[in-house]
Length: 391
Ligand code: NDP
Image (cartoon, rainbow, N blue to C red; front, side, top):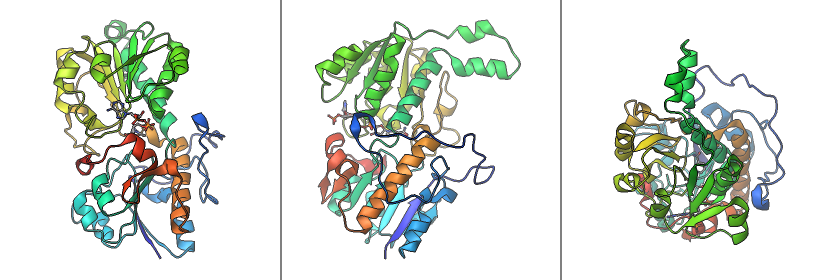
């Protein structure tokens, strides 16, 4: 029988379950491109329920305990005395979410001799040291596509919020003011702007598609060029690298995985090469940008705004400078864990567990590491030796 240790974010401060705003979520038939939605044998939660927090347990307890497995769920993940560290010692499976990552460093993997499966509930497995997982033949898997559109919607929202100065304007309204000049002194339309994405994978392409109707000029860079048909349909300008894109746009939205090629990509020099008053939205991973270079650029006016939902570490300290830097539209790491997204990645987590516990193959598109090497989606998006344990 397997022991599954699941690290999830804490319950809402007003208690669990919350009062839901809606009774249902839309039923989707497939992901863009045709990938099928998760296919677990059944579900023990109502799609639209808060399953991503500790009491939600990803809807897994009944299913696992009926089969005789042990499920431990905790949000206590930091330090050697944490419940996560204690339970890790004899865990067969670890489940973690990028929003509240249980960093599976090489040291932790060394202290988990039975660990065979590291499952990400969501997308982005850079909180797992992939080299260490490869060396120990630990399978790493995630639910590809489960929250890609959720993140794309968040990125588009944050681009509009920054350029239109939405959050400070809302503040004026909420505090009883009518300070139109204060609101609009920093507000523009995105119409006519140059907007670019770093990486046009699932999320990057969805952002491009959603922005096209805004009559912006769209740019992208990626390791692989998109088809000429898609470039033409969306009016895309391709750039061979981030450097070329950064100086050609007013807004950058980052959608690349964190790996050695992208770590610290937006440093002082690259940000300095952008047009004065550019905007950066980063819903990919915090360490793709230089934390302090972003703060300095906002203070000098080189950047007119920075938003995103990814921080390092997570959760960040109360005095993390991104909480208070000027013209920021930061949120906690929420874009990929809407109630809509949770329904999909919790179902996908169960699908993967069902396959793994029954000794059946995990869908190729869910795999990051398998059989001692990068595999499936991971073989496409990641590079080994990514120093991920520190991310
Ligand atoms: P995909 O794998 O679909 O796309 C990633 C793209 O990045 C691929 O096209 C890849 O190219 C490209 N790429 C990789 N390295 C580079 C590079 N150095 N320069 C340019 N392009 C590069 O991933 P998704 O779109 O689904 O997700 C992207 C990232 O978003 C995830 O890795 C994760 O970190 C983050 N994410 C954040 C979430 C959130 O809640 N905020 C939720 C989900 C994901 P190629 O295919 O040729 O390797």
